[in-house]
Length: 364
Ligand SMILES: Cc1ncc(COP(=O)(O)O)c(C=O)c1O
Image 1: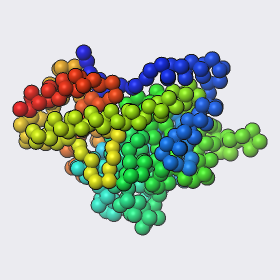
Image 2: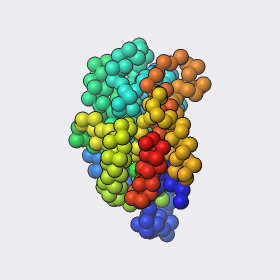
Image 3: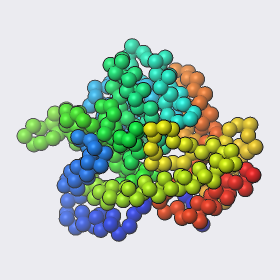
Image 4: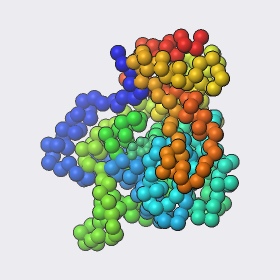
């Protein structure tokens, strides 16, 4: 039986929630979205949560509402999904890429200072594959230079940094995704959390053509980046499952780690203060070792296991590299050495054992 890299966890609760919305006759942004926002804000401990159509829309609208635009630059890692940089570009600003710390796969805070430019307005800290970035150091850098801190928390719902839930937020705002590869899903969908009522209000207007109420009318040129009530109703059921989803993924992560560490393999581990939701599981095969990443991928894929390579660096795309030549060796190496293994709630113990055995039979 093929084993996918990820799979959503739905049952009759989501089916009934969607059915109820359909029967209600109101499927666009409405009461379900408002309830989902309230419940999500309560879960992460944020003052405000604003639901939108995707994680990309969450990033885009947050940057716009924060006043980032033409002539500005934003520092971010290249070891991220391309939407991180696209959102910056959509606002007319420039994404300035820095390298990652190979032990965290997140931006290396030591590299922030050298990347600082007169036009730098913000740092986009990505909590890659659910592992929180070094928020204290990044925040201290932002405060020192008067920069905004925006968290790309697309993968990180349920993760914690030094005991605090991601999304509280640590900077101006945190942006989540509900894409099916994430820990909870609404199909497509996203959420911004922030402590700023002013920012939340502007994002609420921007997501719906620039309008908040008929009395006030159109406040500015906006977008159609709304979440629907159908999506929100599913999201509310998913949020109820989150503790269980988290627990199972973390057990699966421990199982992978315990299977691989004794053989000298290099699974991604949590550093002190980091609590990950293990949105993805990264296992590293350093160049020059007994087996290469490509051999592992070919072997697993031939057995129906949809393992994938590390994240495709954004600066490898010609429309980003043309801006500037980047030297990001840790990012390049991670792409070439990492294998992502299946991890999701319904991955059975037997299936996980098959993945483990398939890796080990090649390596040992
Ligand atoms: C780090 C990161 N940022 C942004 C996004 C964009 O989210 P979405 O697909 O919901 O637009 C994703 C995932 O899809 C992601 O992994």
